[in-house]
Image 1 (cartoon, rainbow, N blue to C red):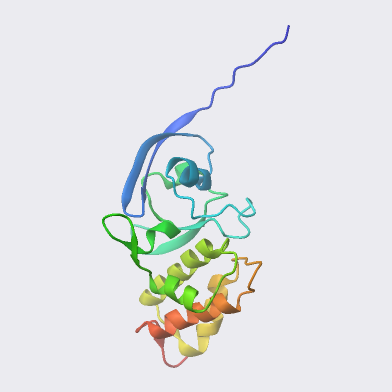
Image 2: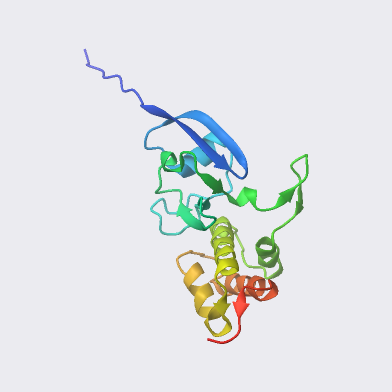
Amino acid sequence: MSNSTITTITTQPLTVHINGKDVGPTQVPEGLMMIDFLHEYAGLTGSRLGCGQGVCRACTVILDKPDGTSEEVRTCITGAHFFQNKKVRTVEGHAKRDEKGEVVSLTLVQQKFLEHFSFQCGYCTPGFVNGATVLVERLKREPVARDKLDETITEALNDHICRCTGYVRYFEAVKDVVLSTPGLVKDGK
C-alpha cells in the first residue's frame, strides 16, 4: 500500500485590464507567472517565453500606470496576481483593428520594424515592440537632446536579446520612429 497525498492548488481571483478590455475575474493559481496567464487564460500568445529567467525580455509587456507613464514588465518572472486591477498592453494591443478584429493599421513602431527588416525569426520582436513603445511614450513627455539620441535608444533596447539580426536594424527602426515623430527630439545638449 502506498500513501498518496492529494495536493490542492490554491487559487485567487484575478482581474486585469488587458489591451483595453477587462479580463476576469478568473480563478488563477497562486504563483502562476503572467506569461502563463496571458497564454493559457487570456488567449494572448504574442509575448514569448524565451529564457524563463527575465533575461531575454521576449516576454515583456507594458504596464500603464495611473500617473500616465508606462514601463516594461517581464512576465516570465512576474506573478499574474501582481497585475491585479492593473492596465497591461501586450503586443496584440498595438495595431488598430476593425470590428471583426482584423488589423487595419500598424503603429509607427511596428511599421518601422517592418520597413527596416528588423527581425528574422521574430521571437524577440514582441519585447522589442513593447520596449520601443515605452521609449517613444517617455520621449513624448521628456524629449531627448539630439546629441543623446543614440545613447538613449541603446539604453532602452540594450537589455533585449536578439539572436538573429544583432541590434542594428532594431536600433535603426527606433531611431527612424523617434526622428519622424515631432517633439521627441530637442536640439542642443
